[in-house]
Image 1 (spheres, rainbow, N blue to C red):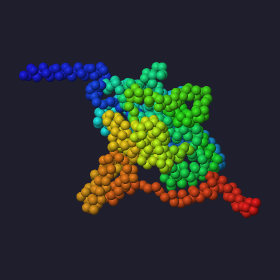
Image 2: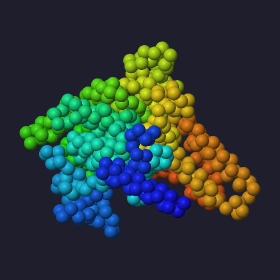
Image 3: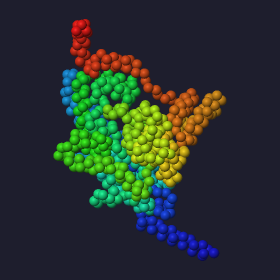
Image 4: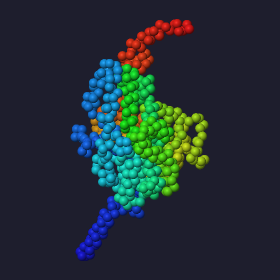
Length: 614
């Protein structure tokens, strides 16, 4: 019997060795064995802007450290001490003379110091001073610190648990880099994932700026470009999440010089209030008046133009964020000189990808690729460009861009009463693609039956919405959802929510020492916890109810000393009143100009009876 057992063990060991040898030879690293042995398809996440770490390095390719830590240089790196040293004298002389004594040039020089590691050359090649942290392996091979970074950006940990982390990959790239070079790397990455997993297809999940990378992939690897094969047969699904497939009006406005804060009136009443607490904004507005109006605007214009010319105009990744309607004007302004010809050629190549995005996606679908889209709306664009209050958006990208063409009312408005869907891309009379809040008509978007919308959801908080992450997981892992009507748990129109904050409060509630609180306090806490858990147990969002649940649970925890009250916007108080009084009485003028303005006002007052008489 022992001999038989020994022989069986030997055979098992030999078989195992053969399997391991085959795996090593073929490069397959998955436990499933690859195609034909696995129910899941590996997924490559293509993250959004700033979701890849680019570290500052010196001329010797050594990491530059700050307090012993590597410096992540997105979007820039500011050495405060160096900035103060450089700006001190020009600022002092400008203040003393009330004229621009080198302050504009100094501002541009400071921007160079802060952004040099993100400046591409005239050929579009990224700077050698920014070193990308790549992940040329699955999450199964990532360190715990790498996993924390990746899952912190894209909370798909549940997906990793379902399909196995050896089926999940994170494609890192430099957000200020070269679109074409990044797409070429992505194609190679897809081939690497296929070889490592033993699968002949992959899913890709382009997020935000990643949508522009997907545009490039479907264009450059469509089989129409010499030396670049067709990638369509290698793709199983494309799950877009808030993709910038037609850029963002914010970047379009920047590139065409249509900036809201260059409107002097808006700079002193509205611009800063849209970006920060009103009290802080009003204080800064008062502080800005230490410079004469013309000097301040000269410095701002010089800084903006320099930043565009040196950073944005040299990065084809940034060009991919310019909407098609702004492209010709922007290229004429920034890429029309002979030394920019190579960059113009590359920008044109991406513009073709942007223009052909629907045709390319349709061709990929005809080749068997399944595609879905998840988007947000109901949040006005950041008020940097003049388009900020003219269209619906998620705060960062216009809904028209992310949704691939959905028609919508502006933020805070609705479509006309009795509005009937246009039916541009869906003629099925049984389908109603108008949102319940009468804001969005999804029938005009490219994939009306495959696009999911979340109302009142901000772009930067998308990852905090557990429903979106759950939907993405379902779409990537399974084939149960075939369209927006497949699962009542994931309707086409849903609402946003911030599950991360609520779950954090629930974790805190679990730490409460029940023995130290009264029965009344325990009952109040239990009711708040139960309400929060009930909300999070459903995949149907309710923005108002979620905010109320968060408010109630926080209040219960604050009473017990386990949480701090949520900081509320500060009353602008005197600063607000004074800033508005200055604007009304002195316009946008600086303090040094007030005597002249005051004299003019006095003369205008004295002459006003005569003018009335005329």
